[in-house]
Image 1 (tube, rainbow, N blue to C red):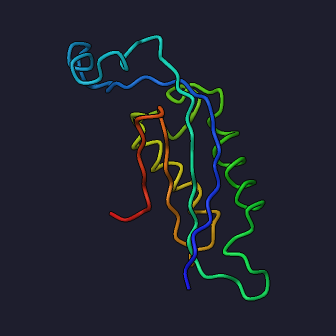
Image 2: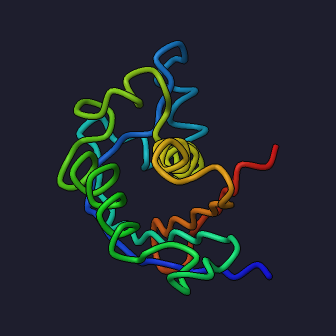
Length: 137
């Protein structure tokens, strides 16, 4: 029997959406105000879902304290109050769109959570705009 447990977290970060290989005109046309050269910020909300079998000994799919610690170490410490373009190595050459941020977070968590568990990341950039990624191509 598969069960999903979930943990919420949040972080605040700045970013700029742009491509170095595009002209200013092209970046402005595609990314609009999100291409502000002085960056802009979001209060990101994150929900991490872990699906797996219930352990017969503990009754857990995954200890939520362990999940909380992993999210803190891999996401909150790495991203909170950072400029994603300048301070986070994963985005030095990757446009920090919500989609790319979600994939990076999923990849970081995948390395820390047992492979027999399925992971889904939901990332809210605003209350109305959010993305999800579960590793399926």
